[in-house]
Image 1 (cartoon, one colour):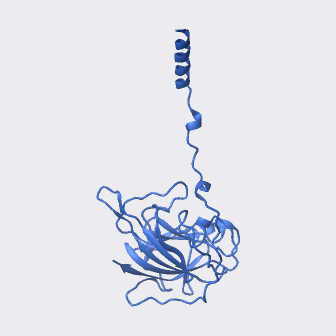
Image 2 (cartoon, rainbow, N blue to C red):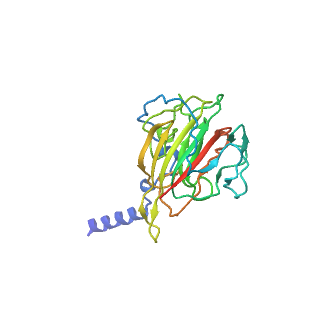
Image 3 (spheres, rainbow, N blue to C red):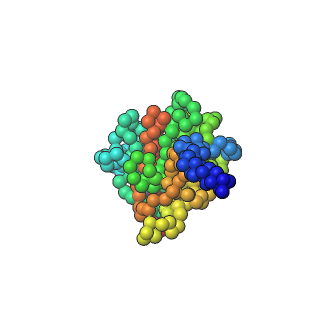
Length: 260
């Protein structure tokens, strides 16, 4: 009996003491950073502006921002347009297309300044959100960043589907030179109850070099934590203003072809 009472007392004591070792640690951005393997550097072919095909919707032709609105309040976009370029304006925030899209082919050209400073994620940081599904930075992000001789986590370099897909190569040009993305986006589909019927896929060519080959996304882009899906049907395309990290990054020659 003495042994039984002793065992029972110990069991009750153990149950009353919190098990701190089982408390999950607070998630950090670094938890989802991957630093290796480093994609091989590839020298791309010569830079040239790719004109839109006859069935394309021209989103920016160098003249105005008529196809764009502020993400914050849906007012007309107020980035700077000069010399055929659209440049992030300080304090104006991210912009997105007035139109919404489902499946499409996208062409977009971008450039960080030749005199860009900083290192890692602080060198021309922006993003092309292939589907902007809500306020702020919600959606599916194709990273924009100076990745020419600039070390950072590889699932956050130029050509990555941010925090999900490492690019197959690094064909980035020097700061001050125009870069080009060509994207085929297959939107996710959802059942009536919001569960995923088919996932999202993205194929990306960076300066003419394949860097994402029909990659299956695990959900929306998250800076902290694991990606997950939220149901939507169609969504705008968003260009990110990342504070001082993205200014004064510029874009030009943006067009899209809707696909079945």
